Length: 118
Image (cartoon, rainbow, N blue to C red; front, side, top):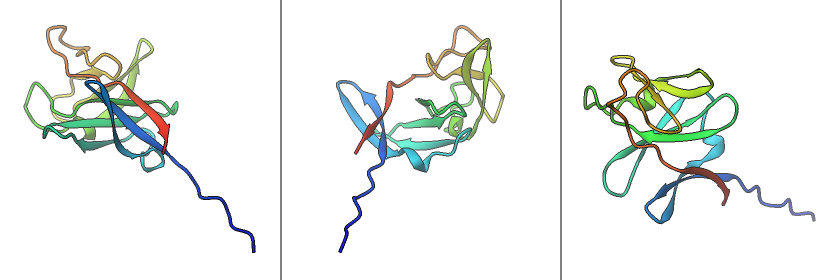
């Protein structure tokens, strides 16, 4: 009898302070869509897999409305920079830096993110 090797999948991990937090399996993410992940301190992160296969994570709270909705936003790019547009007021947030592309005085936290073998 042959036993097939166990399939290992990459885990999406967020960098929090000096530790990595596993939030989901990479193959659970759909390119172009986001998911919300509950963090240990009660906040939420919006985690995205872009169409190029890169994983990004920013705070899920829209700073203009206070609603936890950025994971429901639309992904795009401007001048080669990936962003998520809030589904409420449409402000765009750079997925690498968290900076609002429409108001330089506003930003959200951008998390270090990696896909690591479980």
